[in-house]
Image (cartoon, rainbow over all chains, first blue to last red; front, side):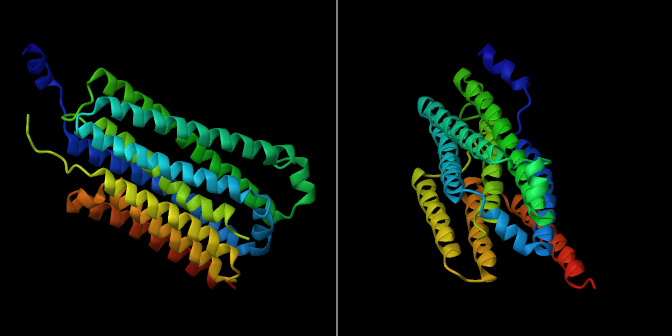
Length: 206
Length: 95
């Protein structure tokens, strides 16, 4: 078994990988945590304006995106179980579903931002500066920064999932070496976790 | 090669968690449409906190992880909570 002898030299430590991933997730939590604190302070100082500005957001699109992310979180979680059960085909299928849902989320976001921009609402736009109060400008600034940063995480998450799926396909990620897929899952759940708070804070204040 | 296996989480657990998450999402949409005044935000955030707890516990496998990983996660959230409290103590008592 030359293949096995070769693999012995490739360092693999699932627990260390997991700790590393969690440490990275902590830095992400503090990045978004800082933004959530900025949001809550500005909201505290501009309560009326934040309520008024939030009326502009489409709760339905926000709710659809929430459902999409929750379902995709489940499909990638199930894929870690199917990998352990040595069901490679099903694992790849579930990862494919996860990626498709992620792309649909981004398409929704594109139309959502597109509608705002069509109404002349974007950071620094003339319409925003002339027709809105300071508090509303702050709300839309935070809306673009926080949902934009979140969308960037979705794109990175999709790349990581595709990379992990490729490794599953090649067989280098398997039931004995599952750390890459597990960590891709952790990252995707983090993206879901952040959205769980973005949704009520931006779309559900009326 | 060690034979130490991860805990394999049954599909049923994930399905039930998803159902709970979706139910909580629709409940939070429902509850903000009722006029609760200043408690609306609190209600929405409580639902979000329960949802994030479910995601962390089951989807992110913390339930099946070793205690020190759970402790690390709890510590980071505790620090974040303390920072929020301190920030608001500052803003609430500014004159």
